[in-house]
Image (cartoon, rainbow, N blue to C red; front, side, top):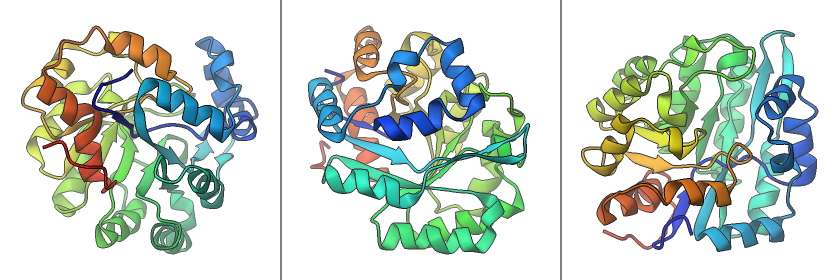
Length: 290
């Protein structure tokens, strides 16, 4: 199991076979990444009951599913368009186990902001999600501020990938230091910097340490590759600021469990990292452990 106290996976791709096909096989840039890293078996997909069984075996209590909005930097067109209704359908099939994020497409402007509010209020989504690279906008660009303002108003977090981009898209648009501008402008907006911040992990740690409203997610990168600095932050002064995500299909729960078993985290640090930080940030309603 991932953790004996139960874990929350804050980043899990839409996992059914049709959705996996659209995201990781039909989208050329993402299919190239899957082939390069030998992850073909991971993208075969699972029906909802099969996936819940995987969660049970790993003791994953809940998983967050983004409605991916990914733009092609090379071709200037939609690469992946997962609609909120499709994620809401998965959530409905697994009450209390899955929760959704609204995918931000900055090109939709205020129509997207209104849809974000609808997804939170009517579909019960727990936050918003941003993959900024293909849109060719930095995460602190003015076109994104209406989305940040709406999330702040609704009291829900924004999960932002802040690390290099494995696809043929510019990485610098998502450097963690850019969270500084957003956190200063929106001091009550919960910002989750995802995917360890690598190769700028120190920047993400600095932002999470500095700002009360900035959090760090160690998702998307194999735990065996996490830096000693990141492990120390999780284990000590980052208590209550760090959370875990597998980022299926990049890592399966089985592979995550195998690599995480080597981590020597203190029991209190484990509870915060694997469960309680996410429980509080996303207001999941799990019984608190502290």
